[in-house]
Length: 467
Ligand SMILES: NC(=O)c1ccc[n+]([C@@H]2O[C@H](COP(=O)([O-])OP(=O)(O)OC[C@H]3O[C@@H](n4cnc5c(N)ncnc54)[C@H](O)[C@@H]3O)[C@@H](O)[C@H]2O)c1
Image (cartoon, rainbow, N blue to C red; front, side, top):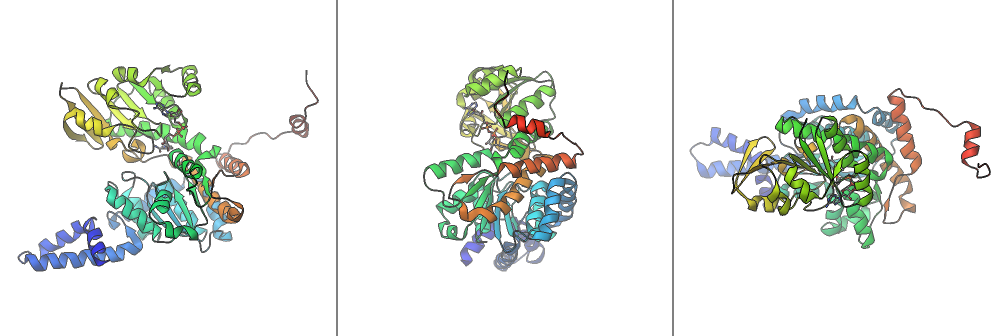
């Protein structure tokens, strides 16, 4: 146990702080220095392990300001929070969440805590954490958070296990890493779990596969399937923030460039339309004939990925699939090509093959790696192939996450009330809740709509009148 603590502590940023202290105090005595350093690390790890593990707690004030800034754009969540404070629907429930640690997630966490939940958070991607937000969650809001931007895979899973040590009654996932860890290595915790929520397309795909394989052992609400989630978050959120990330990290002009979008699902549609709006010539690649047809009729060129590979300037994958940009695509790319991914995992681009193809690699800008091929061509990989919008920018704007996280908050309340009637399956939120979120959002935006007249209602429920 002690060994584990020492090992774990050595892998964290704490070692840097302890190292700096060593130099000051114990300059000439290496043995004492190393002892002191280890004691320092262990003590800090033990205190931080109850509060979380973040990069630098002094970032908290900036994180708090940014969380409050995002809150202004989250009126639906605010309404839910006000009700939760009164009703306490989550009182006494232990929740463990594995989500992108952003300002919007912080507002969700604050809402769940206000509703009585005893909550811990970790990152759902090694590169998506906003370190100032993680610090603020710990020190300003008392929500233990285990997340450091750029953490290695070992730390990533140590953090997942740390939030599982909380012995949750309810889980929240973005990509299913928490639930899959529960079902592989932490099965002893499953009997205490009432149910869970899943945020994204890839997570829902994994959960459905678990359900089909008879592996899933508790009900999960697929938040992604709500209209007020994927129609807005995946489309407008991923659309805007992915373009934002490409521009922030490269400062390139999109106008006049050939911009290739792999996958014309909810995210792909958003990315394509935003790139088109910035003056890029958009090409779409697909494997689904209906979606390909939709892209054609939306005005884009559609062709096989391998053909697009030779003519594109900028490439982005949003498929939820593996090796969509493979070695054969990489081999054909033009000098100067930019490659990014906004799908959930960093396996949409075959990075190991890119590493093999290149004779030289260097980080030329933040979030931009330049790979030089033997013939001198250079291609650039953004954000190590991880979801570019959350790694190289700030992820979705708060206004859109307002609806996604309203689904999470209401979903957790719904799950608690209905878990007894539910099987270990993947469920969607009831349509009335989905519509209610849309109604609240419109209300917050000051937009009014029509209602059916009694005559129209009757007409829509009848079959008698025709030609
Ligand atoms: N970056 C973010 O913030 C963010 C937000 C939401 C979702 N996501 C992730 O983005 C990915 C896509 O989500 P979505 O909601 O758009 O899914 P979707 O299922 O609506 O769309 C995916 C599309 O990719 C197509 N596709 C699959 N394999 C392909 C291939 N080899 N070549 C070309 N097209 C292919 C599919 O036919 C489908 O049309 C998922 O991994 C999801 O989890 C990321």
